[in-house]
Length: 285
Image (cartoon, rainbow, N blue to C red; front, top):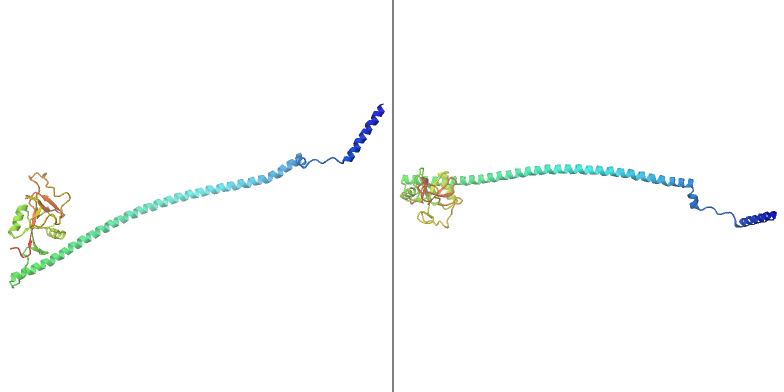
């Protein structure tokens, strides 16, 4: 019995071997399984890590160089900014200095032009006065010689200007007394009708208070020869006439005079100022 069982098992094994021979050799393991085997997986990992490490090193090196370049660029930009600001400050300072110098030069040029203009006006006045004095002197010499000349001229010590004769005092009187003096000379206190005439008077009188023939003692302001005051030329100081009563001398200010700069001011008629008489050419005694 046992022998029969063994024979039967042997036959069964033979049948299995016969079937295996018929099926062929067993299949090879898959590629992924072979690649993932221990040693091969390690080698593959090393092979992939090496290029990756190289790439990381290259990127890190380039990043470090880029960072260095950025820092250098930032430093250069900072230096450039500081340098530019300093240059701008220097240029601004120089510009301000040049601007001040230009303004100073312009002011000096304007002052020189003004001085030249005033000097020219004064020179022309001197020339006209010299011509007038020579003409008056010639006329007076002809009258003294009695050569029959009919030419009209100003009296001795009177100055001719623009068809009028002027006499300039060297002492002071009240406005009323000065006006009476001029009337005795068949004249009147000077009537100033233009800037040129005022400059002529100032040239002979100098910077001193000088009575002129303008008053408001009997009403509104009027010229002593009847010249229209309202439409005529005027040269009052700012805020004048003011008819000031604060001088403590009693009364207001009713008579006009030239001040040291030529402008007009009203004052007490009793003050002793110098004066100028004026008359038409040939009308004096």
